[in-house]
Length: 255
Image (cartoon, rainbow, N blue to C red):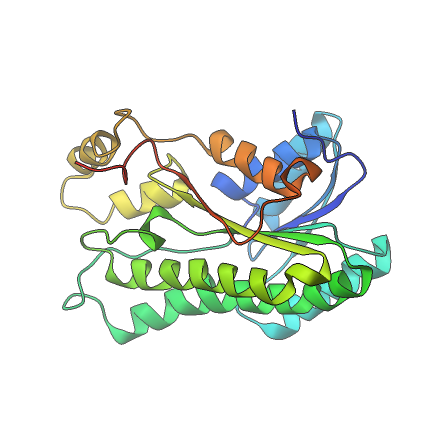
């Protein structure tokens, strides 16, 4: 089993879903977790669960769309802990619609969080990682960044960008001692997915169809994505960089 003993980790969008599961998994593996979210109360709930289970964590607000907020987070973490060992860029939002149904503002909103958010937070923490010649970045992309998904034009556009950003940063900084990877989940049962389902005329039918679209016939669990994030953040993955790890229950394997 991967261990994160003594590592300092920061997770964006840690207030619920995959982000919360990653924060809790990292803490269970003996990392100190900075659980961040634009919704501070949600991040604090994650930290409460971690501490109740004997883990080490703190919560603070982070708006990934604002460069200043990302820089403030880096200043805080470096001031209190002296370093950041693992950064998980998880914060993200979605949208249902074709290109004819999506407004330009919809694309801009998703881009600001899903892409620019990863850019902002990575840029804030990367220089200190380079100076130490050590650091791991895990971006949460999506299977919608590997294959096209119907009625998800804005979402697919941004998640393909996250995969490309991941590979580019990995290549640029491989010789600096930095590893950068992304995880591409399929449909995972989270508040995020439930919000997307609520946009359909028949949410229950949409749920059944989404679950059935994966070869294993069910949706994933946040804990299954968190396990992969823990591996990528650990020293066990020392030879892994520039990868897009697909965890989709067989959705992209073929018809």
